[in-house]
Structures are given as C-alpha cells and as structure tokens.
Length: 223
Ligand code: ADP
View 1 (cartoon, rainbow, N blue to C red):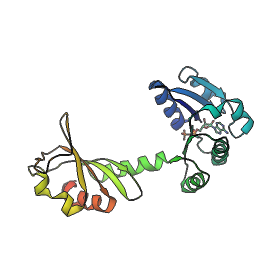
View 2 (view 1 turned 120 degrees about the vertical axis):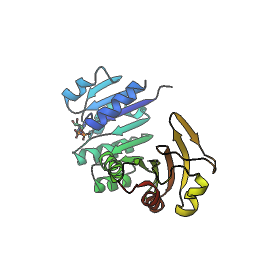
View 3 (view 1 turned 180 degrees about the vertical axis):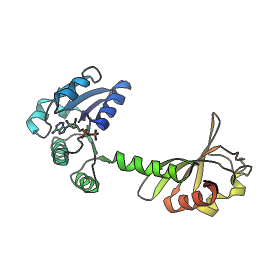
View 4 (view 1 turned 90 degrees about the vertical axis):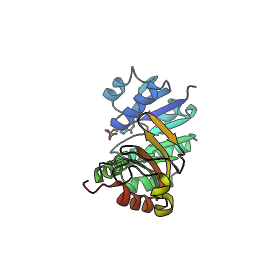
C-alpha cells in the first residue's frame, strides 16, 4: 500500500527519513529551501521541490493539503519550524510529526497541536547512556515519561536460573516479555524457562523498577 508523505527540511534527520520512506516504496514529497539539498533528493523521493514552507501560499500551491502525513525536520531555525507547523495545522493536515530542537521548542509544538514531537538527539543520547552504564544493557526504549522497555544480556547472576527462581516480577515489579536465545525468540516465556549466559531478555516496566532490576541482576560486578 502506498501512502503519501511530505518531508520538510532535508538535513541529516529529514534526509534520513526521506531515504527510508522512499526505500520502503512510499510516495514522498521532499521539500527544502536550499536548491543543493533538493537536487540531492531528485532521484530518491517521488518529487523534490525548492520551497520556503513558512509561506502559506507556497504550501497550498504544493498541494500539501492532499498529503496525509507531513514530517517537519527543519533544524536550527526554530521559528521556521513553528511557523510551518502552525500553517500545516491550519491547512488541516491529518498527521504532523515535528523534530524538536530543545525542550522549549517541544512545549510550543505540543501547544500548537503537532501530533508527534520527536527529539532524536536527546532520545538517542539516553539510549546510548544506558548501554554505556553496563556492557549488558543493549538497548533502552522509552514508552512514556516513567515506563520503558530494555534489552539486556543475561550475565553470570542470571545464568542457570529459571524465571521463577529469579522472581523478577515479584522482586523488581517488571516483566520479561521475551527471551532471545541465539536465533530463536521466545515471546511470553514460561516461568520455568531457564536463562543461559548471553541470552537476551526484553523487559518492560516502570523506570524505577527497571533501574533496581538492572542494578541487582544485570550489571555484573566487573562492569
Ligand atoms: P539536521 O540537524 O537534521 O541535519 P539541519 O538544520 O541541517 O538539520 O537541516 C534542516 C533543513 O531544513 C536544512 O536543509 C534547511 O535548508 C531546511 N530549512 C530551513 N528553513 C526552511 C524553510 N523555511 N523551508 C524549507 N526548508 C527549510
């Protein structure tokens, strides 16, 4: 199924979204104020146009109203990002995703009705920080302000024990939703499942519970 997207701002972030959507066979209208950026995407996106999206007339002429989902990836120019989002909102775009540059920018975007505000540098920083804390924390994905999913590698503390013996739910209040063992993935594992060193556990829970779980069972003493 082809869906229509527009990506405004073809810097590193917008450019990467544009490439990926196009690779997945989606119809993408790529827009940037700079000719150089636009020519880079001529052979990648379905259409690539030079335009200043802070001008409502320009947006209307581009036929943006027919597009289902618009991604605003204007970087440093916060004013242009906010103005563009406001125009898109007024034109009745169904779904607007905007990249925020900082927390104030994010607040304004939420206030003016952006459907999804992303903060890639901050979120990636958080994910990498968690993996730096321990060699055994492989990934960390925020579900909300206080809940996450983490991917952890079982170390010596968990090895050779079953989920019942580890008692993760009762002791730490989080749930093991899947276990990856070599190429197999075991979703909703049984309580009697035996954990081996280097198995990968996918755990969901409140951040404070996950952090206790990490401290006691994941971070090996030599980390
Ligand atoms: P990143 O941090 O993702 O690399 P950049 O700041 O480099 O972001 O990229 C933002 C892009 O947005 C630039 O290519 C810039 O030309 C484009 N841009 C800035 N203002 C406008 C505007 N008013 N209309 C359309 N594109 C814009």
